[in-house]
Length: 458
Image (cartoon, rainbow, N blue to C red):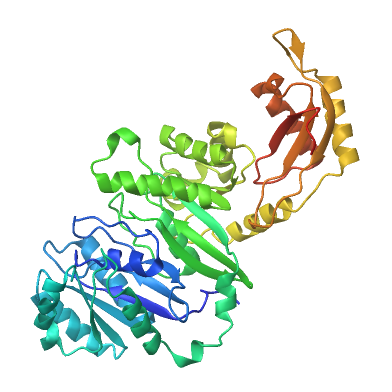
Protein backbone atom coordinates (compact mmCIF):
# COMPACT_ATOMS: atom_id res chain seq x y z
CA UNK A 1 0.00 0.00 0.00
CA UNK A 2 1.29 3.49 -0.88
CA UNK A 3 0.89 6.46 1.44
CA UNK A 4 2.29 8.40 4.34
CA UNK A 5 3.67 6.63 7.38
CA UNK A 6 1.07 6.69 10.15
CA UNK A 7 2.09 8.10 13.52
CA UNK A 8 0.42 10.42 16.05
CA UNK A 9 0.60 13.99 14.70
CA UNK A 10 1.06 17.12 16.83
CA UNK A 11 0.86 20.50 15.05
CA UNK A 12 2.28 23.80 16.27
CA UNK A 13 0.14 26.80 15.26
CA UNK A 14 0.10 30.48 16.08
CA UNK A 15 0.52 33.94 14.61
CA UNK A 16 3.92 35.02 13.23
CA UNK A 17 6.92 35.55 15.50
CA UNK A 18 5.54 33.98 18.70
CA UNK A 19 8.34 31.39 18.82
CA UNK A 20 6.77 28.40 17.06
CA UNK A 21 10.05 27.29 15.50
CA UNK A 22 11.85 27.72 18.82
CA UNK A 23 9.26 25.46 20.50
CA UNK A 24 9.64 22.96 17.65
CA UNK A 25 13.44 22.84 18.03
CA UNK A 26 13.20 22.57 21.82
CA UNK A 27 10.78 19.61 21.70
CA UNK A 28 12.78 17.79 19.02
CA UNK A 29 16.02 18.44 20.86
CA UNK A 30 18.00 19.87 17.93
CA UNK A 31 17.88 22.88 15.61
CA UNK A 32 15.84 21.98 12.54
CA UNK A 33 13.51 24.92 11.92
CA UNK A 34 15.13 28.30 11.25
CA UNK A 35 14.73 30.67 14.20
CA UNK A 36 14.95 34.35 13.31
CA UNK A 37 13.42 37.57 14.59
CA UNK A 38 11.98 38.34 11.15
CA UNK A 39 8.24 37.43 11.17
CA UNK A 40 7.02 34.77 8.75
CA UNK A 41 10.29 32.85 8.36
CA UNK A 42 8.59 29.44 8.46
CA UNK A 43 6.49 29.03 5.33
CA UNK A 44 6.38 25.26 4.87
CA UNK A 45 5.06 22.58 7.16
CA UNK A 46 8.21 21.13 8.71
CA UNK A 47 8.02 17.77 10.43
CA UNK A 48 10.29 15.65 12.59
CA UNK A 49 9.95 12.70 14.97
CA UNK A 50 9.82 13.69 18.64
CA UNK A 51 11.10 10.91 20.89
CA UNK A 52 11.78 12.90 24.06
CA UNK A 53 8.40 12.20 25.69
CA UNK A 54 6.82 8.98 26.99
CA UNK A 55 5.56 8.12 23.48
CA UNK A 56 6.98 9.16 20.09
CA UNK A 57 4.96 11.36 17.74
CA UNK A 58 5.44 13.44 14.60
CA UNK A 59 5.74 17.14 15.39
CA UNK A 60 4.77 19.75 12.78
CA UNK A 61 5.91 23.36 12.61
CA UNK A 62 3.63 25.53 10.46
CA UNK A 63 3.75 29.00 8.98
CA UNK A 64 2.41 31.92 10.98
CA UNK A 65 -1.31 32.63 10.50
CA UNK A 66 -2.45 36.21 9.99
CA UNK A 67 -0.41 39.38 10.17
CA UNK A 68 -0.03 42.43 8.01
CA UNK A 69 0.21 42.29 4.23
CA UNK A 70 -2.16 39.52 3.08
CA UNK A 71 -0.70 37.98 -0.08
CA UNK A 72 -0.92 34.85 -2.20
CA UNK A 73 1.83 33.28 -0.13
CA UNK A 74 0.12 34.16 3.15
CA UNK A 75 -3.06 32.57 1.80
CA UNK A 76 -1.15 29.41 1.00
CA UNK A 77 0.37 29.41 4.48
CA UNK A 78 -3.15 29.70 5.91
CA UNK A 79 -4.39 26.74 3.84
CA UNK A 80 -1.33 24.70 4.81
CA UNK A 81 -1.97 25.38 8.50
CA UNK A 82 -5.62 24.39 8.11
CA UNK A 83 -4.55 21.11 6.50
CA UNK A 84 -2.17 20.49 9.40
CA UNK A 85 -5.03 21.10 11.84
CA UNK A 86 -7.24 18.59 10.01
CA UNK A 87 -4.55 15.91 10.02
CA UNK A 88 -3.33 16.40 13.61
CA UNK A 89 -4.26 14.54 16.79
CA UNK A 90 -3.15 17.34 19.14
CA UNK A 91 -2.70 21.08 18.56
CA UNK A 92 -0.15 23.29 20.32
CA UNK A 93 -1.39 26.88 20.21
CA UNK A 94 1.62 29.15 20.79
CA UNK A 95 1.16 32.71 22.06
CA UNK A 96 3.69 35.40 23.01
CA UNK A 97 3.49 36.35 26.72
CA UNK A 98 5.63 39.45 26.30
CA UNK A 99 3.58 40.78 23.40
CA UNK A 100 0.27 40.03 25.11
CA UNK A 101 -3.09 38.88 23.80
CA UNK A 102 -3.84 40.04 20.25
CA UNK A 103 -7.02 39.98 18.10
CA UNK A 104 -5.29 37.43 15.85
CA UNK A 105 -4.81 35.16 18.88
CA UNK A 106 -8.51 35.42 19.71
CA UNK A 107 -9.55 34.70 16.11
CA UNK A 108 -7.18 31.72 15.89
CA UNK A 109 -8.44 30.37 19.22
CA UNK A 110 -12.00 30.40 17.86
CA UNK A 111 -10.85 28.59 14.72
CA UNK A 112 -8.99 25.96 16.73
CA UNK A 113 -11.96 25.29 19.01
CA UNK A 114 -14.10 24.58 15.93
CA UNK A 115 -11.70 21.76 14.98
CA UNK A 116 -12.74 19.87 18.17
CA UNK A 117 -9.15 18.65 18.49
CA UNK A 118 -7.31 18.53 21.84
CA UNK A 119 -5.53 21.86 22.32
CA UNK A 120 -2.62 22.82 24.57
CA UNK A 121 -2.28 26.58 25.07
CA UNK A 122 1.47 27.23 25.19
CA UNK A 123 2.31 30.67 26.61
CA UNK A 124 5.85 31.23 25.37
CA UNK A 125 8.58 33.70 26.31
CA UNK A 126 8.13 33.40 30.07
CA UNK A 127 11.90 33.73 30.25
CA UNK A 128 12.07 34.73 33.91
CA UNK A 129 9.96 34.27 37.04
CA UNK A 130 9.05 37.97 36.94
CA UNK A 131 7.24 37.30 33.64
CA UNK A 132 4.94 34.61 35.07
CA UNK A 133 2.11 37.07 35.82
CA UNK A 134 1.91 37.80 32.06
CA UNK A 135 0.28 34.40 31.51
CA UNK A 136 -2.92 35.66 33.13
CA UNK A 137 -3.62 37.79 30.02
CA UNK A 138 -4.56 34.65 28.10
CA UNK A 139 -7.11 33.24 30.58
CA UNK A 140 -9.91 34.84 28.56
CA UNK A 141 -9.22 32.39 25.71
CA UNK A 142 -10.70 29.63 27.88
CA UNK A 143 -8.25 26.97 26.67
CA UNK A 144 -7.02 24.17 28.92
CA UNK A 145 -4.50 22.86 29.59
CA UNK A 146 -2.32 25.96 29.43
CA UNK A 147 1.41 25.97 30.18
CA UNK A 148 3.84 28.86 30.64
CA UNK A 149 7.20 28.05 29.04
CA UNK A 150 10.37 29.57 27.65
CA UNK A 151 11.44 27.80 24.47
CA UNK A 152 14.60 29.91 24.36
CA UNK A 153 15.72 28.76 27.82
CA UNK A 154 14.05 25.33 28.04
CA UNK A 155 11.70 26.18 30.89
CA UNK A 156 8.62 23.94 31.00
CA UNK A 157 9.72 21.56 28.23
CA UNK A 158 9.17 18.36 30.22
CA UNK A 159 5.79 19.58 31.46
CA UNK A 160 4.76 20.30 27.87
CA UNK A 161 5.86 16.83 26.72
CA UNK A 162 3.81 15.32 29.55
CA UNK A 163 0.73 17.33 28.59
CA UNK A 164 1.06 16.22 24.96
CA UNK A 165 1.34 12.58 26.02
CA UNK A 166 -1.88 12.84 28.02
CA UNK A 167 -3.76 13.98 24.90
CA UNK A 168 -2.31 11.55 22.33
CA UNK A 169 -4.77 8.89 21.10
CA UNK A 170 -4.70 5.89 23.42
CA UNK A 171 -4.69 3.49 20.45
CA UNK A 172 -1.17 4.52 19.49
CA UNK A 173 0.49 3.02 22.61
CA UNK A 174 1.26 -0.36 21.03
CA UNK A 175 0.87 0.46 17.35
CA UNK A 176 3.47 -0.90 14.96
CA UNK A 177 4.31 2.45 13.30
CA UNK A 178 6.71 3.10 16.21
CA UNK A 179 8.82 0.26 14.88
CA UNK A 180 8.63 1.76 11.39
CA UNK A 181 10.07 5.03 12.56
CA UNK A 182 12.83 3.33 14.53
CA UNK A 183 14.21 1.98 11.24
CA UNK A 184 16.22 4.16 8.89
CA UNK A 185 14.13 5.33 5.93
CA UNK A 186 15.76 6.02 2.59
CA UNK A 187 16.66 9.73 2.59
CA UNK A 188 16.11 11.45 -0.77
CA UNK A 189 17.33 15.06 -1.06
CA UNK A 190 15.58 17.16 -3.70
CA UNK A 191 17.95 20.01 -4.61
CA UNK A 192 18.18 22.74 -7.20
CA UNK A 193 17.98 26.43 -7.96
CA UNK A 194 15.02 28.44 -6.62
CA UNK A 195 11.72 27.88 -8.42
CA UNK A 196 12.72 24.85 -10.52
CA UNK A 197 9.85 22.81 -9.07
CA UNK A 198 11.37 20.95 -6.12
CA UNK A 199 8.32 21.29 -3.87
CA UNK A 200 5.94 20.67 -6.78
CA UNK A 201 7.67 17.38 -7.52
CA UNK A 202 7.36 16.17 -3.92
CA UNK A 203 3.72 17.26 -3.73
CA UNK A 204 3.03 15.40 -6.98
CA UNK A 205 4.46 12.25 -5.41
CA UNK A 206 2.74 12.43 -2.01
CA UNK A 207 -0.40 14.11 -3.44
CA UNK A 208 -0.59 16.59 -0.59
CA UNK A 209 0.41 20.25 -0.36
CA UNK A 210 2.92 19.52 2.37
CA UNK A 211 5.48 21.93 0.90
CA UNK A 212 4.24 25.30 -0.32
CA UNK A 213 4.38 25.86 -4.08
CA UNK A 214 4.54 29.45 -5.27
CA UNK A 215 5.79 31.40 -8.28
CA UNK A 216 7.85 33.44 -5.82
CA UNK A 217 11.42 32.07 -5.87
CA UNK A 218 12.82 31.01 -2.51
CA UNK A 219 9.53 29.90 -0.94
CA UNK A 220 11.15 26.96 0.85
CA UNK A 221 13.58 28.25 3.46
CA UNK A 222 14.04 25.23 5.71
CA UNK A 223 15.01 21.75 4.63
CA UNK A 224 11.61 20.08 4.97
CA UNK A 225 11.54 16.36 5.81
CA UNK A 226 8.45 14.64 4.38
CA UNK A 227 7.91 11.00 5.38
CA UNK A 228 6.28 8.67 2.91
CA UNK A 229 5.66 4.94 2.58
CA UNK A 230 5.42 3.07 -0.71
CA UNK A 231 5.18 -0.70 -1.16
CA UNK A 232 6.13 -1.20 2.51
CA UNK A 233 9.30 0.86 2.02
CA UNK A 234 9.91 3.92 4.18
CA UNK A 235 11.16 7.05 2.43
CA UNK A 236 11.88 10.58 3.58
CA UNK A 237 11.97 13.36 0.99
CA UNK A 238 14.18 16.28 1.98
CA UNK A 239 12.78 19.37 0.26
CA UNK A 240 15.61 21.90 0.39
CA UNK A 241 15.86 25.64 -0.03
CA UNK A 242 16.78 26.80 -3.52
CA UNK A 243 20.56 27.10 -3.74
CA UNK A 244 21.63 30.52 -5.01
CA UNK A 245 25.10 31.77 -5.75
CA UNK A 246 26.79 32.84 -2.52
CA UNK A 247 27.23 36.43 -3.63
CA UNK A 248 23.53 37.01 -4.24
CA UNK A 249 22.03 36.32 -0.80
CA UNK A 250 19.75 39.16 0.31
CA UNK A 251 19.51 38.17 3.97
CA UNK A 252 21.10 36.12 6.72
CA UNK A 253 18.03 33.85 6.59
CA UNK A 254 18.85 32.87 3.01
CA UNK A 255 22.47 32.18 3.95
CA UNK A 256 21.30 29.77 6.66
CA UNK A 257 18.82 28.17 4.23
CA UNK A 258 21.50 27.45 1.66
CA UNK A 259 23.89 26.09 4.28
CA UNK A 260 21.15 23.67 5.38
CA UNK A 261 20.46 22.65 1.79
CA UNK A 262 24.14 21.82 1.36
CA UNK A 263 24.08 19.85 4.61
CA UNK A 264 21.02 17.96 3.35
CA UNK A 265 23.09 16.70 0.42
CA UNK A 266 25.60 15.21 2.84
CA UNK A 267 22.97 13.45 4.96
CA UNK A 268 21.00 12.07 2.00
CA UNK A 269 21.31 8.54 0.65
CA UNK A 270 20.30 9.65 -2.84
CA UNK A 271 20.18 13.15 -4.31
CA UNK A 272 17.83 14.33 -7.02
CA UNK A 273 19.11 17.51 -8.64
CA UNK A 274 16.20 19.26 -10.38
CA UNK A 275 16.81 21.11 -13.65
CA UNK A 276 14.29 23.49 -15.25
CA UNK A 277 13.64 22.26 -18.81
CA UNK A 278 12.67 25.77 -19.92
CA UNK A 279 16.16 27.12 -19.20
CA UNK A 280 18.25 23.97 -19.46
CA UNK A 281 21.35 23.28 -17.38
CA UNK A 282 22.73 26.57 -16.07
CA UNK A 283 26.07 27.34 -14.45
CA UNK A 284 24.39 27.21 -11.05
CA UNK A 285 22.88 23.80 -11.87
CA UNK A 286 26.42 22.59 -12.56
CA UNK A 287 27.60 23.95 -9.20
CA UNK A 288 24.73 22.19 -7.42
CA UNK A 289 25.48 18.90 -9.21
CA UNK A 290 29.08 19.43 -8.13
CA UNK A 291 27.93 19.31 -4.49
CA UNK A 292 26.51 15.84 -5.15
CA UNK A 293 29.71 14.71 -6.83
CA UNK A 294 31.86 16.10 -3.99
CA UNK A 295 29.70 14.38 -1.36
CA UNK A 296 29.93 11.11 -3.37
CA UNK A 297 26.19 10.50 -3.22
CA UNK A 298 23.95 8.39 -5.41
CA UNK A 299 21.97 10.54 -7.82
CA UNK A 300 19.08 10.74 -10.29
CA UNK A 301 18.82 13.96 -12.32
CA UNK A 302 15.26 15.18 -12.94
CA UNK A 303 14.50 17.65 -15.74
CA UNK A 304 11.19 19.26 -14.76
CA UNK A 305 8.61 21.40 -16.64
CA UNK A 306 8.68 19.33 -19.83
CA UNK A 307 5.00 20.23 -20.29
CA UNK A 308 5.94 23.90 -20.75
CA UNK A 309 8.67 23.03 -23.24
CA UNK A 310 6.26 20.90 -25.28
CA UNK A 311 3.60 23.59 -25.28
CA UNK A 312 6.08 26.13 -26.67
CA UNK A 313 8.16 23.92 -28.94
CA UNK A 314 5.62 21.36 -30.13
CA UNK A 315 7.06 18.12 -31.47
CA UNK A 316 10.41 19.69 -32.33
CA UNK A 317 11.97 18.99 -28.94
CA UNK A 318 12.18 15.36 -27.84
CA UNK A 319 12.93 13.79 -24.48
CA UNK A 320 16.03 12.11 -25.96
CA UNK A 321 17.37 15.50 -27.05
CA UNK A 322 16.87 16.95 -23.57
CA UNK A 323 18.55 13.92 -21.97
CA UNK A 324 21.53 14.17 -24.33
CA UNK A 325 21.96 17.90 -23.71
CA UNK A 326 21.66 17.45 -19.93
CA UNK A 327 24.25 14.66 -19.92
CA UNK A 328 26.62 16.78 -21.98
CA UNK A 329 26.37 19.70 -19.54
CA UNK A 330 26.58 17.49 -16.44
CA UNK A 331 29.30 15.22 -17.83
CA UNK A 332 30.98 14.91 -14.42
CA UNK A 333 27.79 13.32 -13.04
CA UNK A 334 27.58 10.81 -15.89
CA UNK A 335 26.68 7.93 -13.58
CA UNK A 336 23.29 9.52 -12.77
CA UNK A 337 20.23 8.57 -14.86
CA UNK A 338 18.31 11.52 -16.34
CA UNK A 339 14.51 11.58 -16.11
CA UNK A 340 12.47 14.15 -18.06
CA UNK A 341 8.96 14.86 -16.82
CA UNK A 342 6.51 17.31 -15.32
CA UNK A 343 5.57 17.73 -11.66
CA UNK A 344 2.51 19.75 -12.71
CA UNK A 345 0.98 17.08 -14.95
CA UNK A 346 2.57 14.09 -13.22
CA UNK A 347 4.22 12.93 -16.45
CA UNK A 348 6.90 10.29 -15.72
CA UNK A 349 6.83 11.04 -11.97
CA UNK A 350 6.10 7.36 -11.24
CA UNK A 351 9.25 6.37 -13.12
CA UNK A 352 11.29 7.93 -10.33
CA UNK A 353 10.52 4.98 -8.09
CA UNK A 354 11.70 2.54 -10.74
CA UNK A 355 14.99 4.41 -10.97
CA UNK A 356 15.36 4.43 -7.19
CA UNK A 357 14.89 0.65 -7.16
CA UNK A 358 17.55 0.29 -9.87
CA UNK A 359 20.02 2.35 -7.84
CA UNK A 360 19.31 0.36 -4.67
CA UNK A 361 19.75 -2.91 -6.53
CA UNK A 362 23.03 -1.70 -8.05
CA UNK A 363 24.34 -0.77 -4.60
CA UNK A 364 24.04 -4.43 -3.56
CA UNK A 365 26.11 -5.77 -6.47
CA UNK A 366 29.64 -6.98 -5.76
CA UNK A 367 32.36 -7.83 -8.26
CA UNK A 368 34.32 -10.95 -7.36
CA UNK A 369 37.96 -10.40 -6.43
CA UNK A 370 39.21 -12.58 -9.28
CA UNK A 371 37.08 -10.80 -11.87
CA UNK A 372 38.04 -7.38 -10.51
CA UNK A 373 41.76 -8.08 -10.67
CA UNK A 374 41.53 -9.40 -14.22
CA UNK A 375 39.57 -6.31 -15.31
CA UNK A 376 41.99 -3.85 -13.72
CA UNK A 377 45.14 -5.67 -14.87
CA UNK A 378 43.79 -5.70 -18.42
CA UNK A 379 43.08 -1.97 -18.10
CA UNK A 380 46.64 -1.28 -16.92
CA UNK A 381 48.07 -3.37 -19.77
CA UNK A 382 45.91 -1.76 -22.47
CA UNK A 383 46.58 1.79 -21.28
CA UNK A 384 49.49 2.12 -18.80
CA UNK A 385 49.33 4.95 -16.24
CA UNK A 386 51.23 8.15 -17.10
CA UNK A 387 54.69 8.81 -15.71
CA UNK A 388 54.64 11.27 -12.80
CA UNK A 389 57.99 12.60 -11.55
CA UNK A 390 59.73 9.70 -13.25
CA UNK A 391 57.53 7.05 -11.63
CA UNK A 392 54.52 5.07 -12.82
CA UNK A 393 51.57 3.71 -10.80
CA UNK A 394 51.71 -0.06 -10.29
CA UNK A 395 48.79 -2.25 -9.23
CA UNK A 396 49.51 -5.24 -7.00
CA UNK A 397 46.04 -6.30 -5.87
CA UNK A 398 42.44 -5.06 -5.75
CA UNK A 399 39.31 -5.99 -3.84
CA UNK A 400 35.85 -4.56 -3.23
CA UNK A 401 35.44 -3.19 0.29
CA UNK A 402 32.70 -4.54 2.51
CA UNK A 403 30.10 -1.85 3.13
CA UNK A 404 28.55 -1.03 6.48
CA UNK A 405 24.84 -1.20 7.27
CA UNK A 406 24.41 2.40 8.40
CA UNK A 407 23.08 3.59 5.01
CA UNK A 408 20.41 2.06 2.74
CA UNK A 409 22.44 3.02 -0.36
CA UNK A 410 26.21 2.87 -0.33
CA UNK A 411 28.36 3.56 -3.38
CA UNK A 412 30.73 0.69 -4.30
CA UNK A 413 34.25 1.14 -2.95
CA UNK A 414 37.27 -0.63 -4.41
CA UNK A 415 40.56 -0.82 -2.54
CA UNK A 416 43.64 -0.88 -4.78
CA UNK A 417 47.01 -1.83 -3.31
CA UNK A 418 49.64 0.08 -5.29
CA UNK A 419 53.25 1.23 -5.05
CA UNK A 420 52.37 4.91 -4.46
CA UNK A 421 48.78 6.26 -4.19
CA UNK A 422 49.83 9.80 -5.21
CA UNK A 423 50.71 8.53 -8.69
CA UNK A 424 47.01 8.18 -9.65
CA UNK A 425 46.05 11.11 -11.89
CA UNK A 426 42.49 12.35 -12.21
CA UNK A 427 42.39 11.31 -15.87
CA UNK A 428 43.51 7.77 -15.06
CA UNK A 429 41.02 7.62 -12.19
CA UNK A 430 38.21 8.28 -14.69
CA UNK A 431 39.66 5.65 -17.02
CA UNK A 432 39.61 2.97 -14.30
CA UNK A 433 36.09 4.03 -13.32
CA UNK A 434 34.94 3.47 -16.91
CA UNK A 435 36.62 0.04 -17.13
CA UNK A 436 34.89 -1.10 -13.91
CA UNK A 437 31.52 0.09 -15.24
CA UNK A 438 32.00 -2.08 -18.33
CA UNK A 439 31.77 -5.05 -15.94
CA UNK A 440 29.03 -3.59 -13.74
CA UNK A 441 27.38 -0.23 -14.66
CA UNK A 442 26.44 0.70 -11.07
CA UNK A 443 23.55 2.87 -12.24
CA UNK A 444 23.18 6.09 -10.23
CA UNK A 445 26.23 5.39 -8.07
CA UNK A 446 29.67 6.99 -7.91
CA UNK A 447 32.56 4.54 -7.80
CA UNK A 448 35.00 5.15 -4.97
CA UNK A 449 38.63 4.12 -5.54
CA UNK A 450 40.71 3.95 -2.35
CA UNK A 451 44.42 3.50 -2.95
CA UNK A 452 46.71 2.06 -0.30
CA UNK A 453 50.46 1.44 -0.34
CA UNK A 454 51.46 -2.17 -0.70
CA UNK A 455 52.57 -2.53 2.91
CA UNK A 456 49.21 -1.45 4.36
CA UNK A 457 46.84 -4.24 5.39
CA UNK A 458 43.19 -4.28 4.31
